[in-house]
Length: 332
Ligand SMILES: [Ca+2]
Image (cartoon, rainbow, N blue to C red; front, side):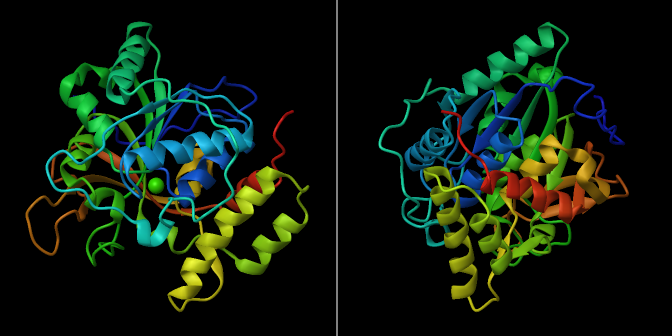
């Protein structure tokens, strides 16, 4: 097995052509924000796979197709797993609203999914990349079920997978859905364990830094006030409004946390990472209060591949990348 022990960052964008990028998403509010950030910053995913998570699979797929329609871009969307590998389904509609987009205004028409076989699509794509000596990047911002299934069915696709960027888990053991576990991992711990055990170049954006990289509500207002009026602005502003409203309703100040958009920014511009730890990461699978917890081991004693766990990014650059999505005007 090839273990990744250090990150080598790509040269500036103008020099090296981008690798193809797949986005795997569970269709929540910050997933839509992440997709808009990718599009607005010139890295529209080449394909999208959907998964259950923040909402059910069908709603997640609808939300992705709606976001693409608002942004005026056409990307093939493959629907994937509708449930975890083993455990019962949980969701986060209490955070993302019943529709998963916090009631953001939807476009009148959307495209149809390209297929109902995300796992087959991932296998074919990575297999083909490996065969031509290439790699395809993947950004995962929901439960890791689709990639886990693909890796289990066809382990050799590891050779065609470029950088895997994951929003999920914790670095210091402070979760959100439980005191120990973060939602994306807790939603399918067995899947996460399979993915984190694979010999891949993996960057994890865990929960705790998502709580220290934020933008104040009035700054969000200023961004949108400066953006040209369009259905895209209205949609994006509604997503931000829902995210902020949820935070305020829990008794916190008016801020918006960068969660999935932070992982998206890291995926397309890893040079924004300011602080990270290189560590084995394994997932607690036992029943009980620590199920779904990510154990982060910089010593390497766990013996599994060393991953990069992000602790801090360039907040000014992250904010600028989000601002680009606030200012994004779909091409006619
Ligand atoms: Ca998500």
